[in-house]
Amino acid sequence: MLSSVFIVPNGTFIAELVAFLVVLFFVGKYILPPLNRMLSERQDAIRAELAAAEQARSEAQRVDADRRSALEHARAQAREIVEQAQRTAERLAEEARDRGQREYDRLVTSADAEVRLARQRALEEAAQHLGELVVEVVERIIGREMDRAAHQDLIQEAVDALSRETGEPGAAAATAASAASEP
Image (cartoon, rainbow, N blue to C red; front, side):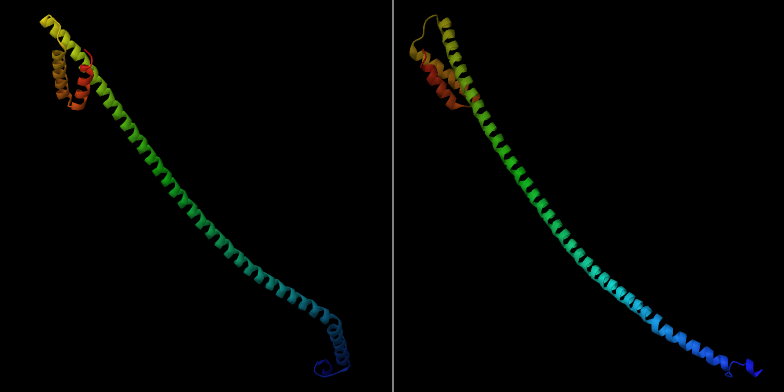
């Protein structure tokens, strides 16, 4: 019974102990160094990958900051371009309004001058025809020809009446002068 107890040393125990120590020496001498070297290389590779990842992350952050800065700069430039385009459009619209107003004023002034000129001509023609008509009527009524002074007085009366109706004394004087020169 004592031989079956493990605690009591016998010959097999020493053989097992020697075999264990040989296997332990063999594992420690030939298996553990390459395994430790592979684990060390793996650790170094992981550390290098972590360092590269950290560097890539910091580079990505720097590139992102650069991109954001460039984007903000581009937005600022776009805002400036839009503001400049709006100022240019407003300036061009103002210039177009000014040109239109000047053209309108020119056309109104020109039309007003043409109306005054046409009115002047109409008054002159009316005064001339009126003077001729008055002379014809007087000749028919009187039955004789009128002398130059009477003719002149009748024309002046007609022109004065016409100018009172139209309210243009300058036109009447010009008309009277032109009518007086024609007998």
